[in-house]
Structures are given as C-alpha cells and as structure tokens.
Image 1 (spheres, one colour):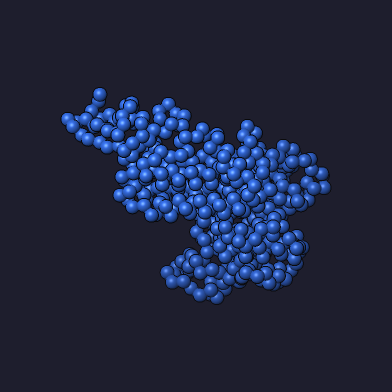
Image 2: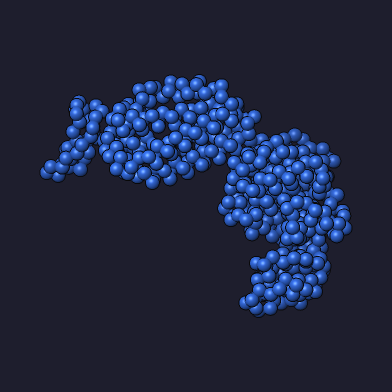
Length: 509
C-alpha cells in the first residue's frame, strides 16, 4: 500500500488516524472493509466558507423563485419531468429540513436518516407533504428552513466543525463510481444542490415560458444623411440590459407596441452617401399593413431618423473641440429605443445606485413582469405593460431589492396605466407645456426633465440645468479651470454658443 494513500471503512464509526513509519492507519470501532477515501471535496470547508457559499446560493435561488409569476408555478418544469415549481420548492424545503436533522445527528455520531431512503422516495415524500400549501406559505416555510440552518451553523464552534469533519460515513445512496464519505461540511453546504435547481429554473424560464416569434416581415428606412448606424442605434455609455443585443452594423431588441410584443432586428445596409437600414420585424402572428406603418412611424421618431444634422454641424463647426468630436462621430443622433414609460423605469433604477446594482434591479423586473422572448435564434427579456406593475405591491417590489424605488415605480406605472400621461400627445405640445407637465409628475425634477426633453422629445434648444459632475467637465474643457464654475456661467456659455442645438452639442461631448 502506498504511503500517502488514505483508507476508509464501510462500517460507520469514529474515524481516527495514526502515523507510523510514513503510513496512515485509519481505525474504526468495527472494521469490515477497507476502501480508498473519496470525499465530497479535496479539503473540508471552514465555517466561514460554508456560510458564504450557502448565503450566496440562497440569495440566487430566492431571486429565481421570485422571478417566476405565480400563474406559472403550476406548469411542468420540463416535458420529461412531472414536477412544477411548486413541487420543486417543496423538495427544497424537505432537503433543508433533512440536512439540518442530518447535521444534528452527525454530531451525535448517527448516520443521516436520508441515507436510508431511495432518492425518488425521499424527494416525493416532501413534495406530497407540502403539496397543499400556497405559494406564499411555501416561500415562508423555505425562508424559515434556511434561517434555521443559518442559526444552527452560527451556533457551532470552529472546533466542533473541524472535529466533525474527521468523522466519515460512506454515502450508500451515492450513484457515482466512487462512494464519497459524508462529512459535516458536505451536509451543511447546500450550495451545490441550490445551483442544480437554479439551472432548472433558468431553463424553465427560457425554454418553457419563452414567447417564440416566428412570423417576420422586412421593411427599410432611409435616414437623412449624414448618418452613422452604430452611433445612432447603440450608446456604449448606457448600461447593458437583456432586452437588447448589439454588434457593429446589427442591433436586436424587443419592442412593445400597441399591446403586441415584437422582436426587431436592425441591419446597416449603407451609411453613405445614401443611408439605408433594413428592419426585420418578428411577431407571434401576422401583422396588418396599418400596424406596420404605425410601427415604422414610431421607430423613425425614437431613433430620430428624419433629423437633419447639417445645420447643427455648420453651427458647431467653428468650435475646435467639438469639431474634432464631430469628425469622429459624424452622423450620430440622440435617440431612445424605448417608450417614455421605459425611460422613467430606467431612471428609477438608476437612482442612487451603482451600475451593477441597477443592472440587477432591471433584470429582476424583466424576469418578474416582462416575458422571455425568442427570435432570430436568440433569447431576450422584454418590458411590460404598466398595468402589470399595478398587480404587484410595494412589499413584492421591495423583495426584488428595489428599496424605496418601489413606490416611485408604482406611482409612475399608475400614471401611464390610467393614461394620465400620453407620450404621443405630449410630443405635440409646445416645449414650455411639455416641461411643465413633466415637472408636475411626482419625483421628477429639473435634471430628469431636461434629459427627457432631449432624449425622448427631441428638444435641443435652451439648456436649463447642468448637474455638478457635468459642470466640472465643462469647466475644464471650455474654461481650462480646475474649479467647478457656477451653473449660471456654464449655462450662459453653452446656450449662447450652440443656440437651438445646445442639448445636441452636449450629447456629443
């Protein structure tokens, strides 16, 4: 026998080691058969490692569970699997409770109870036990079971965990080629099991709940020159969301228009001298000619394809700094690919949050209220009708980690659902009225109003507010000053220099 080879006995018992002449001897109270040890991992986990792993997987698993709408909880997770999400959560509760009991038994040197059951029988036991509980009660029970495990882990001393990990039981029901031994850390580390079912839920959302758009129609746009496709259809400074994909000369996005969920694929066919953009519209059912024409008009507006940049370039040309920028980005337009409602939603999740948290909040909203969409052999998220949010509550939105933003999202969704804000009508009002109406919306200040006027309503004239971080930038660029100049001075300079193209000039900077 090799000097470094570890051995294990089939019979359960207290494991001890003794080194003599370079060999490791493993002694059990009752020794029947010797086998090479195959543990669940190469090195036992510490208390901190166990806690960190299960906290992360618990957080990820909770997110996936809450992202599925209640009406979809009774759908089969897979065609070849009878379990629903309701059944899966019942199984997770049973697994948690079984592992907690096993850990307590383990400290008493007892073999875990679940090792005596065949997997299917053990799992179905809990599915049946909790089958009559509502979704809400199941979730509460699940949260309670995880809290119990967390308290138990917290109660253990480092010495207890370290000592318990020298105990070993052959895992009789393990189906691999080598039977590992169960240790306390392998019982309490639920992360590997969580990850398996996180993947199950993600596949369920993508493959079962996805809306496939097979019908398609092709149309063309002819933007006014000069035109640059990539800079007019994609802004790299915007945070990435799963409703859009882009690569040079191509853009895909989901698009909710007149109650229909669409998939759009834009292709650059020519940028100069005669710009041409091909659009393939994907839909569930065939679209009428009237609908397509209305959609075409909306896309021209959102992407500002009819805007003539020539006058702006004449005005801005004498400015040396802007001249070099225009040379690089010539043909770039201000655009917003979504609706005004969607613009508000993005503004809400951006409030006082780092980008990585904003992205998580946005995705949680997509998963909970939008749809998963498949078109052109790609999967996308989609925005939702504002009425969907009103079916929710402040508490549920806070559970999606929106915090105080939950109230703002409910408020703005209510305004759009009740048609108190009509985006198309708003476009036709004079700029002063547009501004006053926007400022009358609770939670909307002068900064957000200025962005909306430029990005969504194509009002590029007088700028009335410059955020502090932008003033710092302009102070350096135009005045060569390391100090942040007053807002009044910066506004006066920009408005006088660029006139009716001020917001457009700022966009280029």
